Image (cartoon, rainbow, N blue to C red; front, side, top):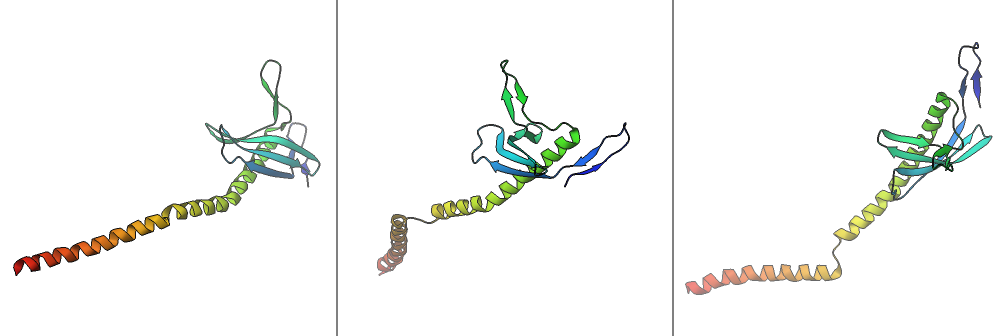
Length: 152
């Protein structure tokens, strides 16, 4: 629920927004955009096309935008106040962190299975290793026998 506290004319109105954000991480980001996101505000207004960007100063949320005739990007929807911008950023970045955390077990399982496949030798490799072991065991037996034979 939205919670407002009205102050005198020279003070800001503080509003807590009910924000529901969803983030969709990009599997293999090619640029600085690492996820797309959507936002539901107070169960009344939805915004899609937000981006989670990994910039030089850290992660931030980029609002949906369009390119004008001069080639400049203009935000289509955006928070009007600094407080609303902080709330939106926090909600989207939190959703991104949860989405990445949720996908980590899947990534870890895939990595384990790939690692297991690399560590397990193939049948041909097992046969070659067994042949090397049997040759290595046979060679010391011949070496031990030779000196005893020469001593006779």
